[in-house]
Image 1 (cartoon, helix red, strand yellow):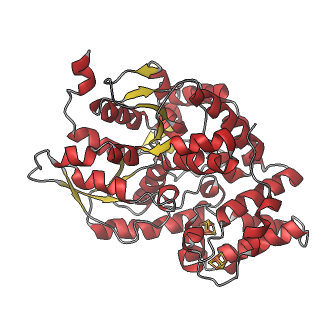
Image 2: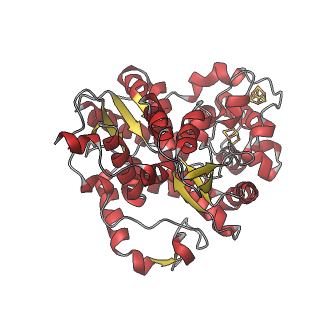
Length: 427
Ligand code: SF4
Ligand code: SF4
C-alpha cells in the first residue's frame, strides 16, 4: 500500500528555509501578483504555522496555500533545496483531512479515482463534442458553447477523442528481437484529448524496433489529485498503476507527458519500496530516445531547404528535474526544423494542475509573459513535451491574438520518420 509523506515528516525541510528570498525571482505566481504571501518562503512559513497549530484553517490561510502551481521552480534554485512544492502539497492534504476537500477537489477525486467512470464521461463528451463546443478559427482549439462549472467560457480546450487512445490498440505491439521492451504510460491527456501524440509515440518506437506494451488497466498518475490535496486518491491510483505496470516484464516505463513523468518518477519515488523501483524505471520519451541514439539517426537525414522555425517550452515537471537537453537534441536534429530558443523558455506556462481552475486570472497573467516571448522568438510553432502545457500554451497564444500552433515534439518527429520501419521488415 502506497504512502505519501505527512506534513510532520517535512519538519526538517521546513526548518531549513532561512527566509533568504532567493526564490522570489523564480516564482511565477509572485512574478504575476507581487505579493509576499505568494512566494515560497511565505508558504513554507505558513505550512510551519499549520504544523505547529499556530494558525487555524481560516480562509486567508487556505487562499495563500492554494496560490502555488507546485511547479518546483523555487526548490530548484533554493540554496538549501527546500522542497516547497512537496511541503505545500502535504499542507493541502492536511487541510483536506481536517476540513474535507473543496467541491472541485471532491469532483477530481471522484472522477480520477474511478477510471471506468472517467472513460464513460470522456466518451460521452467526445460524442457530444459538436453540441458542447464551438470551433475556433484555424483549428486552434474549441470553446464551450454553454457555461460549465469551474471552466471559463473564454478558455481554449482540445476536442475530446471519440475513442480513447488505449482502446485503439492491442496491449502488446511487438518490435524487433534484441531491442528493449517498454510500457507506455499514456496519461489522461493523451488517452482522452491528444490521441495523435500517442499515435506518434508508437510510430517513433516502432521505427526504433522497440516492443511497446500499453497496459489497459493503467489509471491517472494522480498529479491532479496531488494538486487538489486528495492524498487518498493519489495513493489509490499509485497502487493501481503499480499493479498494471507490473503485469508485464518491461525494461522501462516511458511517458510522453511531463506531469505523468513527475507523477511516476518523483511522487511515486518518494513513496519508497516497489514505487521507488517503478520510479527508477520511468523515462521521459526523449530521454529514452536519446539513450537509444535517435538524434544521431536523425542527423543523418537530408535537411529540408526551407525548414519551419520552431521554439521549445520547458515543462516545469521536466526542467526542475534536469531534463532540458534531450527534448532540444531531438528538435535540433529534425531535418524540417530550424530551432530557435525563446527568452525564458523555462518559465512556467501557468497551468499548475488544478491551479489554473482556481486562479485562472493569475494563470493568464503568467501566460501573457510567455506569449510575449513566443512572439519575440519569431517561431511559427511552439513545441513542448506535455499535453497539459500544450493546452495551456494554446490558450495563452489565442488570448494574445497570436497565430502560433502549439504541438508535441513527437508530432514533429514523426513527420521526419520514413513509413517503413524495422518492426515491419521483421514480420
Ligand atoms: S525557500 Fe529557499 S530560497 Fe526561498 S527563502 Fe527559503 S531558503 Fe531562501
Ligand atoms: S512551487 Fe512554483 S508557484 Fe509554488 S512557491 Fe515555488 S515557484 Fe512559486
